[in-house]
Image 1 (tube, rainbow, N blue to C red):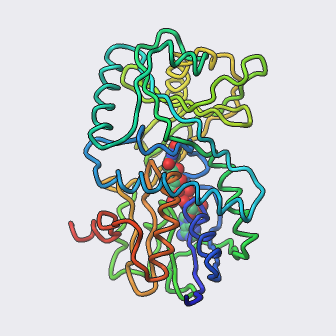
Image 2 (tube, protein in one colour):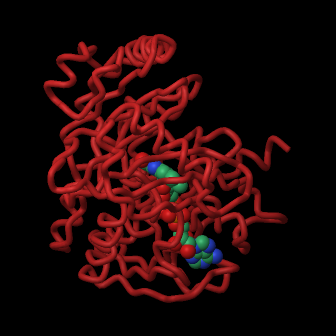
Image 3 (cartoon, rainbow, N blue to C red):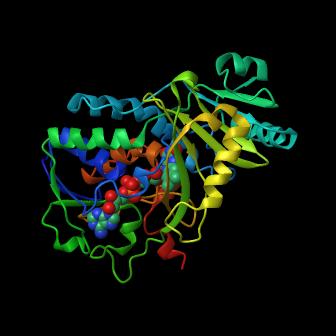
Length: 363
Ligand SMILES: Cc1cc2nc3c(=O)[nH]c(=O)nc-3n(C[C@H](O)[C@H](O)[C@H](O)COP(=O)(O)OP(=O)(O)OC[C@H]3O[C@@H](n4cnc5c(N)ncnc54)[C@H](O)[C@@H]3O)c2cc1C
């Protein structure tokens, strides 16, 4: 195999996972980012949830998400080969719960849809669910178990990836890239999240990427010693049709997320934080007694059809962005397929729906 000098633009989870995979294959890798880990990856929940996150009428996403979940253990193992840092990878599984009858109807519809697409779930009684997770509210009216939906702790995992990249001789440049033609490298892969829409030098005319920020408020709590461990599985719920999730971490914290807003406000909004905590308490009453650590807001890099932009756009440039709500999960696919594209090999999964130029053509 030819050894290449590859520039990776952007140091979020996608850039780091791609850089590490490239370096592991013997390439010389340089990562460019003026503020590593300052994007969506820093705020994400970290659910690896191809089944719970199945989205109506989003059939092209299913194979991407299920392949990404299958490939995740490889990415975790690769990271562990180069770094001792923890990743927060947990495989206890996920429960989805309903708070009232309307929410249960929503849950049943979701389950039917999941089954139609061959995704594995199991209905539990509230009693069975509370035997697994005693902190769940006795007032819940429906529970579905998804053993195959796992989690990482994104801030830990991205730090471990960064550490692994350093151990694998990846170089870092604390600089923003405005034009890829100014970079001295055989190949460039643009993993700059929302910033990719501002980077030129790879297309005729305007940058065709239509990325938009979809903000999410998210809250971090600490479980007091007398309640620990509050939960072991990820618990997702519908409360009056609003989605909420609780992600228990090995370090005794719980992440509660996330709202979804396109109002351009990059800070946590009081009403969003209030709604998340109120809904989380409905599902797990012990949340009320947890210590409040912080609330933050992150911007998911959304595209018009909610599918990523992943593909080769010139002899020298590959685009890898637009991972929207699923970029922590899809990082394993982004790294694997991104490296295949950089090396000029056929990607392991059909990326026809992810063509980075598809929205230019439709204008
Ligand atoms: C609240 C919230 C909850 C989420 N929960 C989940 C979840 O549970 N599961 C899941 O799978 N996904 C989740 N996501 C989505 C996930 O976080 C994103 O899809 C993912 O982090 C995108 O990663 P990225 O590396 O592409 O982009 P980012 O993490 O945004 O990183 C992009 C990087 O590029 C750099 N950059 C930008 N412009 C330039 C430039 N010109 N030159 C050099 N560098 C540049 C930035 O500084 C940044 O470091 C969530 C997102 C949010 C906001």
